Image (cartoon, rainbow over the protein chains, first blue to last red):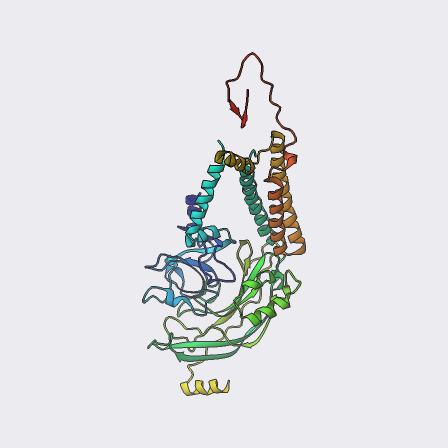
Length: 145
Length: 231
Length: 103
């Protein structure tokens, strides 16, 4: 299912969970985004919301393209979070002023709010896992075969 | 369904199914709402090119274009119950030397101004101060949607972003146009942008291009200062 | 003593209902939740109010949980009538079936 979706959308991770509030109020933490990484009708353009990776950092970032210079795979793209005052130049790798098309994992096409929040809660509050394990244990004790 | 635990699990799992189906219906209901966005005015009112630094601590100097503009548009039909926010933005587009003209794949495109118009259902998420928030919430009191927020009227608006080019040169650039775009962010479903083609009940956005103009020559530094002090 | 107490807690927790009750519960879950979903969607669409749809949907779902999860008496109106123990074959002493000691 995941593989198939990955092939169809041509994106290594076609569904991502929003981890930061930099695109608020459009996206909140925990929202689920469906990505599309093919340029069937037009190139990735200004105004699209893209997920990109920066060399040396493993957390992908979801921001909007605000500038584009040139066309094709060598086009220089600049991104910015709707909720941030400044553009993303500071977030890029050292000496990198622009993104290229290949840095982009996909453009956001679909949106489902809140569903990914469970994963955020579990990763940020490990004690919740203990609580859940405890609840499961209680259920086992209280259940008859 | 024998024990309470099984009933709890079954009810929850069917609840998630129903929730997904309802969400899909909400997303699909977007198609039933006609979209008739219009632009009645988009023109530049003042053009300037100045020299400046990309960062505070940068030694490099680049040319920056400051494009003031006026805008009249009506996006009220884009606000339905599934609209979370409308993102409206104005880009400046120009061809590079020897490149093709402006268009969907314009060679150089940069946002000079943007705004986020939240729907009343998303007002609590807006990133504004408490006073502005109170005012915003009061403006939509008792209303679940507020299409009147889609009416835009800007006169001699200062750009939010001063734009440059990787070459650092924008002065005397010819064939520049402004273009108005929008992006509808739904509560659930597909993100949509302004279209060039008609799509069933959704009309394309016509008149979103300004007339072609040329950027002026570089402004002398002392002149820029005088301009600044007058404002 | 502790075992007895645990048994009582287990009984409450388990919330058994009879076969007719199980059928009824299944039917209620399916119909009531679909109804809640439909009401939430149409009310939200007609009044163009997404918050209303969310509140109706969640509120209705909570009601369905309350209606279906606890072992209400109306789920236990058709208790299974076990056949009486025949004299010929005597069941071994202390045979436990469904938590009732037979024989």
